[in-house]
Length: 434
Length: 157
Image 1 (tube, each protein chain N blue to C red):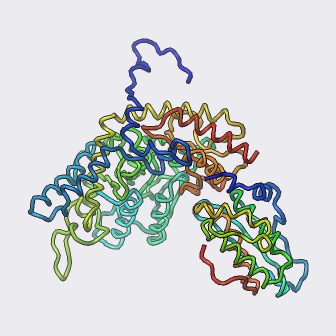
Image 2: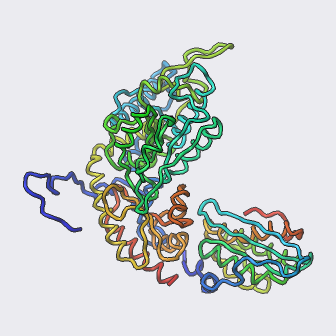
Image 3: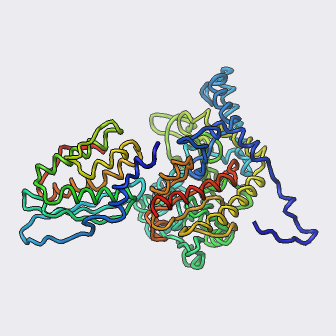
């Protein structure tokens, strides 16, 4: 990395929070294993992250010692389980600086969280007395971007089909940045919601949101940020970002699968109609009709993933103990290192920003004409685990004229040696396919 | 796992120098033509296979698509093996190839039936890649059915 002298009195490189990566790696049992006779080089954390012992222990401990259903039992185990579940909610609220614990709704994952908001719009549109901010129909518009994951495309396409609303898109520039040049024409008085990825799962781009937020406020629309790839990797403050909703998923941030989060501004969640009906989400039920609990319970019908929520709370504790600013900086250094290293590979083309600014540690690329499946297969034979394919972001692939890409993605436990192994592996790929 | 079991010389050769690639129109105006487009949704690979038949023989099998070395080489081998064959004959080869790919590496291929297709025996050990190898063969089956010539009992990839 190049370094430049920073004038005294300014923040210096040495002021940046750091941690010992080797010690962090020792917390992750899976990092000890071998793959195809080589040490595991896991470069697929944007797909799912590994879990530290601290999280695995809490998951096992919950089932071994505190297992009971939540929010309905007077007995001791039920109380312990409820306290653990609600305790996890409080940890997650603090992690994203939510003004109230009740603004954190547990879901299965980000996909379910986005669908929940989309179906709330749908349901509100069928009820004349619903809050007008959630009522949508012909003439109204939903705005997303070309760099969304399918989970932030398809729910809105379906909502548009159900309601007659129009779906509009922010384009992406050749450098893989969000093209905001048409912002004022794209986000207008007709816009009901802008649902935007915070960090792209394929390009690695971290979108600057303030101009968009400002425009959304001007026109009275709502803003949802898909933070599936950002909350695990950088400090998130929902007050500072001034979003209306954010969504993220536990398994990408050292937590288990099956647990995700919808955060919504309290006042908005209170105005939002229910989506899933069932136990736990009601106030009272008669044979004639039901009334509903306040958020977050209103949106958590049925027995939730209790142990998973508790373990996600442990994951948040773990990440906090290392420090999100330190993790963010570690990944920034890795990204700079990787972009420099990949630039030395002949025929390699990076999709997305090629500087470590306004981007995270997820790098998609093409290696000459070699199909990503073949790249991934050769790398796997060397123990290097990358993702290949369209990454559930086909419009991005279409935008850059490729059916698929190879993607390496980093996390708090990734090392520069692993990036070296990737680069050496790519040399092997070139040998097999010349 | 041995990588060279997967990327046999024959496969790389078909990939780099595909046989019969490019969609062709029928030369005989009364020939029956069937076409099918198949997609592998997990990786985005696509292939279009077009068959031309007089009702008995596959007079041409042409294809176009994009995808990994395995899927593209497999289409080339398909063209080599089945073009000019009678439908009954082709069905035997098709069935043998599907059986090989579904065999998890436990099936010993018969070179007399499968020709260059035996090179795909190693692919059967990689469950994630079996779909790649079968993509063109499944598209061929649909295309043949559309041309009015069934080639194989129902197969599940």
